[in-house]
Length: 130
Image (tube, helix red, strand yellow):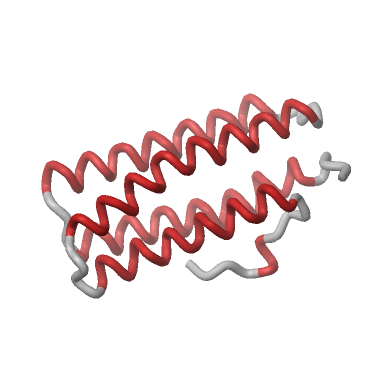
């Protein structure tokens, strides 16, 4: 998932983290599609699992600072995504990594991240005053 300037929220720390997430999603897809092996895919999944937790915590802290009125709803969406990643990681661990799983995972993550950045995150970015 290539980073696009249209994803930028104008919040440097968050934009930097979103870029890193896009890069990791690219690594996940590349690892699976080039047959780099299950270990690499699992490494990327583990990274995504831990990184999204840290990233979401940073977003949520910022939202509290700017008194974002939809904080609770946003936080719930984050929790849902973390649970999806954990479920996919569990599936990969139990059933093994294959190209179909990697493509499905990549599509789910890419679609979720684009939608989340462009709608949900864009909404709280309106409240941000540098």
